[in-house]
Image (cartoon, rainbow, N blue to C red; front, side, top):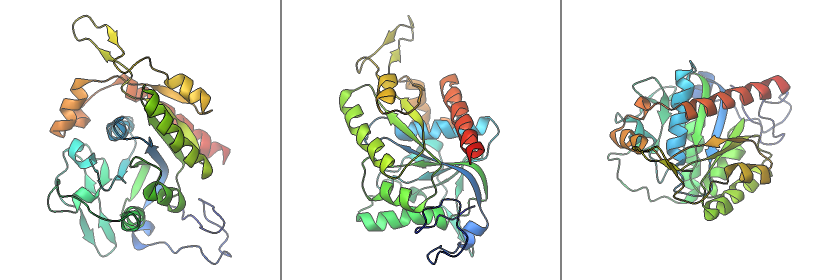
Length: 281
């Protein structure tokens, strides 16, 4: 697993002449994470964590080893939707992540506090440091994909992620509302400042399908994800519906039981784009 150099900005390491190359932690020496994908939206309420969770599930079903780093420290939901309640463990080498019933590894502050509904009343720098430690001090072992569930906004945590974690690609989650698209553009512009590689944009909650007549109802207005992706010059990965079944399974902690060919197709695009990036390098 490569260590990003803060001076030469190389995510693949440098020759060693740079004086500020950080030494690998014991956890990093025991980890090999091949692809890191940041899932961000800029705006809350667009279902980013559910999208992150289902992308992880789809990648896992296609035979890949997957992990999730829950960077939404003050509003973590990843352990809940996967039904992981056991607290994270630790040994002399670092933090041992939780594991879902189907083998997805995950780390979240909610695996470290006494009760899942306890508030986290921390200032930004402390939260940012914790997110960095989720990368440097967690023993991820062998992973094909590590998904980062970023919090809304363009503040301390996203900045720390782009500065301290070698992100390979970014997935933007948006919604049909014009307000959501306006705020999402802020996140895209922020990621551009860090020369991020965009894997694409997903439009979530684009419509709901009537269970009786199967009519498509666009309750938040006409979807504009394809146009928004074109406007921002990034690929469009597809649109996702509001599905009460997904909400039900997530509330029960059984998101891994949900099946969706739409998520599978998006995951296949992520796999293809990650392979393209490797071949270009």
